[in-house]
Length: 323
Image: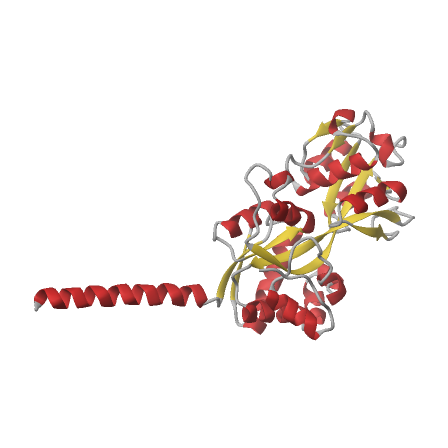
């Protein structure tokens, strides 16, 4: 009798554990959200979005400071995060298993929820002899930190002029270090990839003066034709101090990605929490000004989650999904 009772209790315990696991796997009222550095736009904007997810989707989302796009994708792969922010080019690298993800292999356990705002590829200099991408040959150029999204953006821009890293003197610096190096005359130009206006560039333009170099014409056409995650963008005059002309360039999209196994209802509610409340979000973060359904549904290189697709469909927009 004692053994039977023990066996029964053991069976009951196993049953409860299985039910508990199943319940946890279906309970998506709590999500971890990878953003970016604590001083950057990803973190501040992610914090705002997390509030809206809780208020309007009834989902407790914790925005976590991280190393950015690649870290967020890898952490989602490991199951630590269920949501993250990423540059559209970096998430494309993960999806295809190329560039920053070539060594470790493709990651495709995430889906697009929405594109949020443009991250502008900004080529800046204080050298009067640099007027286009071709003029970078032989110069000392900051191309971003090795393996970063900015690094690959720089490589793509150089390629459009028939240049490689061997044709320049590459410096692998953060945006802040690039600013200081330009100020001190240690480098000739730098690639800064971020939403404009970017603080580092504003500071430099205010104190020392800086020139933004156009990435336009044949250069831009070549880049977009080969890499469809880029789009045309113009930085309006007056965005930076002493900038008296529009500057043509390219941009990638700061995008919100979500675990592919998140339920359709949860992702639908998350999408609605953003796009049903655009006017409110605008008041809390400047990048909210760029929120719109046309841009949100513009990603073509990575599939959308079905929950997001359902929301967009209700608003007359069809996006690509996959299992």
